[in-house]
Amino acid sequence: MDTMSTTRDSDTARKAMIDSQLRTSGVNEEFVLARMINVPREDFLPEDKANLAYIDRSIALGADGFLASPLFYGKLLLEAAPKPTDRVLVIEGGTGYLAALTAPLVADVTCVSAADAAAGKLPDGEFSLILIDGAIEQLPGALADIVAENGLIVSGLLLRQVSRLASGRKVAGQISLSPVEDIGIPVLTAFNRPKGWTFS
Image 1: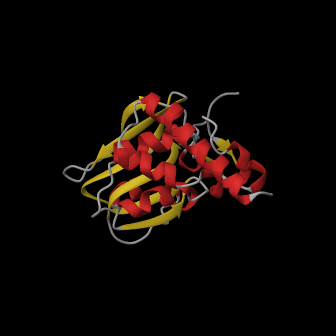
Image 2: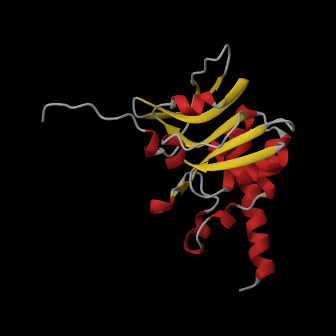
């Protein structure tokens, strides 16, 4: 395989992603575009799915999770507006891509799996920014508790079977997620609400 040709193809695909998926959807901030053009999505996929890296939708990875669409990550970073002083917790969708996008923009990034986060197995301390790589049905209290006062959570939110980008800032010890805009986001099933008993 011609490595130089492959690199050129990847660079071209990332530029097309920026121009046709992000800029046309209102993601024009340079810090977002710079991160997304500098982090090759194919590096976070198994070899047999690398050719799908720049499609405009999420890529399922079976039990290993997913890589969400470029637009989700662009919109999430735009809403989060990470600061150099932020201590960030990333709830992983399974690839490490979101942490790689975020790390150079902030002071510190810690990652935890969705299953551990949903079960309350969380790192010590408070975080000024929590990024959730997927859509959740509910925000566990344990996760809300480790958001610092005036800190921010940015996540996907599943409401009535529609996924939306959402965010919430902690004020006076309280935080809730408010929808920002509808966007296709894979669901982190570990955060599903318990199903109530119903008649069959």
